[in-house]
Amino acid sequence: MGLGVICAIALGACNQAIFKTKAAQVSQLVISTLGDFKTFNYAFYGEFPNIFLYTAEGLIAENGKTGKIEPALAESWEISPDKQRITFTLRNGLKWSDGQPLTVDDVIFTYRDVYLNEKIPTDLRDLLRIGKSGKFPTVRKVDQRRVEFTTPEPFAPFLRVLGMGLLPEHILRESVFTNDDEGKPKFLSTWGTNTDPQKLVVNGPFMLESYTPSQRYVFRRNPNYWRKDSQSQPLPHIERIVMQIVESTDTELLRFRSGELDQLAGLGSLRPEDFSLLKQEEKRGNFQIQQGGLRMGTLYTMFNLNTGRRTDETPLVDPIKSRWFNTKEFRQAVAYAINRDKLINNVFRGLAKPQNSPISVQSPFYLSPAEGLKTYNYDPQKSKELLRQAGFKYDKQQQLLDADGNRVRFSMITNAENKLRVAIGAQIKQDLAEIGMQVDFAPTSFNTVIEKLDTSLDWDCVMLGLTGGVEPNNGFNVWNPDGGSHTFNQGSKPGSPPVIGRQVSDWEKEIGQLYIQGAQELDESKRKVIYGKTQQITQENLPFIYLANQMAMAAVRNKVENVEYTALGFTYWNIAEQKVTAQ
Image (tube, rainbow, N blue to C red; front, top):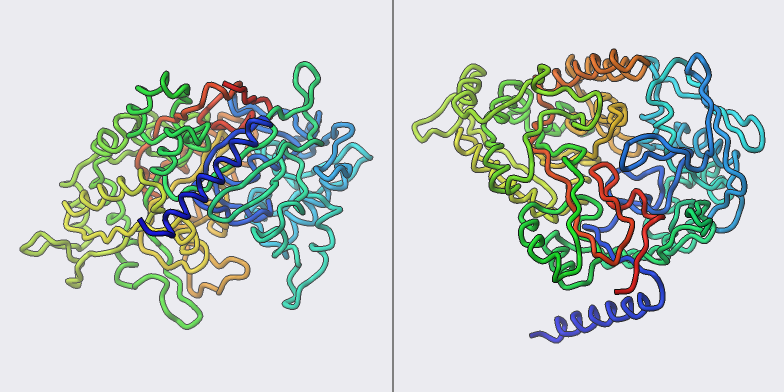
């Protein structure tokens, strides 16, 4: 064994010993995450998980068990009869983590000066666009404790949208209104991951105490957090959270089994292949596996439908491949060729169900197959028929060629840290080989995948997931053709090179318009009809080819009390009420 490896092991053991010693002195929870986060600035996060699950809070919160809206920083609110005005009343005595008062002025600053500021490229603004005009709400200070939001027209999801985290005006105002040498607000480079965590001012139950790249995040209890328990004791109960940064789900499993982690998949779900192993170890390992029903969110593969060009006229996607990807029958053929039953039985070990919709099954707006949602059951012969109808053909070796004789071959990527997705990708490669397609499957780092989707736009096919929820409009930035997460046909983003000649299809436009209509409609039964149509269009045109909906599960040490794991809130939604006891 090399000296470097020995030193690394020794240092790792030393670090663990330090934290275990500290754990003996204070209440400490040890969890994990795959890879480093991209930002410490709430306005710019677009990933899950993130530090804001622990550090940020908004006017209202979503109960992770019921999905219902509950008071948070606002103790109450009133909605006007015309449904276009919401007036919030803040709690008395709110403070930021640095002890400064949290006031209505912070609410005004957060929404008017940051989220609604056109100079600040935040995807959160997409959630605040209202109606066909894309107009934004206005924000007005009523008095020292009340703030009023007014929408230009009725907007059904508006109350739920206002759970966005608040930002401290006394810390960030100068950066918003001061420009850098390029004429951009300094806020754009404020609170990046190179920021000293001690300088971050937050309002959630925890503060970020330290960050060691590629190793760990350490969160410390926020002494100025507003919540109290039933005995009027200040929350949270846990003094410190250590979030280890691991390179793969395999490493997470090893660390949990060795006792280093208090939770496994607490920010997501257990891998199905780990369930049977861990189930046998519950008693010996002093933990329990909690189940939360089917996961909210989606797992999908998608093709790059962008027909645009870079400024040097280079196509974002090889024109030959782009013709394939933009052929509806090609995408449908791929959907029919993926053996999802085999995927569920072999990769998910039976702990999943076929997925067919962008809207979570728990949502009242979900359209089921029984209600008319199109599905793509495994049918390779149907795949071949569709391909032939679209002008594709087969050679003597049963390799798929397009009408011009080009071999159908493309690359597919996913994040290598997620071994479940790597296994799924391997099967998809085999399934598509059965219909003559050659897939070059190349798992890569999560940050590289995101860079390709957000910045370079240089990719053929990708497999990823999106978080879900009760309210469909939370996905508006995915379905709005100009949205920041319209990844299958991404437009130019602020600060990125322009995309020339990008085309948006009629069905994309229709989905975007239906999402606007769905947000305008206050009658829930009529909203269901509107969102039902969006699901029918997505399943017909397949910008996302949905795969399977996994059972949500997490393994939690018995010493961690009050954990209520759910598919909506995972283990973090009631983190303030949780306790860690000595065992």
